[in-house]
Image 1 (tube, helix red, strand yellow):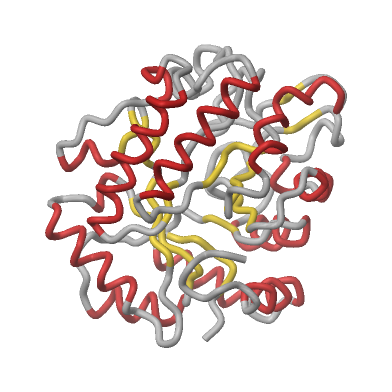
Image 2: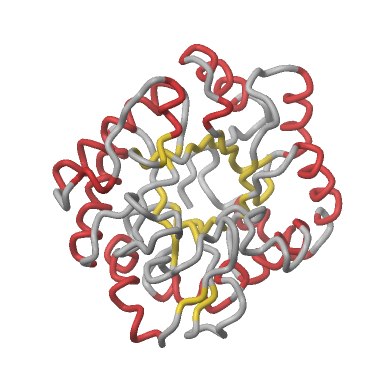
Length: 310
């Protein structure tokens, strides 16, 4: 069975017939869980087992935003894991942090960690990036991201670099509004360096919601073809995932179906939604026969099913 090109979430934390029916209809490539889904280790393990077994012939991949520190969904289960700022630009610490998170995630039944953050500092107050960055220097950020990814990989968890082409330098939180980034492409080379360095080592890259002057200055990167062309030119041949299409940076531009088709048409491999199950099914009904939707589904058929590896 070929999955749909979406990464979606669930309304509830307890597997039941309604959840099973929803996943059987949605057939998502992936499911993302949040702190509200995590009640106990046993409950999470049972939920992940149910998700993995929800579709015939394909096991959806299960992800968590587990960066550590400020963004630590596992804190809901009592874990206090270090964040990027506590690694003090030390790649050995970054690898240990990735390994510790990966071992816990793997033990619970997760497949993917939407981390590490490859954005360069300094983080301006109010952007939501405070305490989430490995540093200001591209070599430091690249080496720490590589180490964190290696720690995850050693534990059996795939990582995801974010937020391409870099939210460094933004002054707005994309959860609430669309940031604008000044400067030409030459001015962004330091921000692109970690992606160039790690392009062949990471299966997923998450594209962030910001408008860049070197693109057209108004279209979010998630919806601009130039973003995905640039990512490909850096040597990345994995799967690109949009940041959440229900974030304030993009919701005023179109409805969920329009944003989904727009991002897939621009070049995204997968559209990530944090929406209700009802909204997800409604959107799926709308986009199911669109040519770009069918093309992205066909592309996923060439991925190694169940591993997330292109």
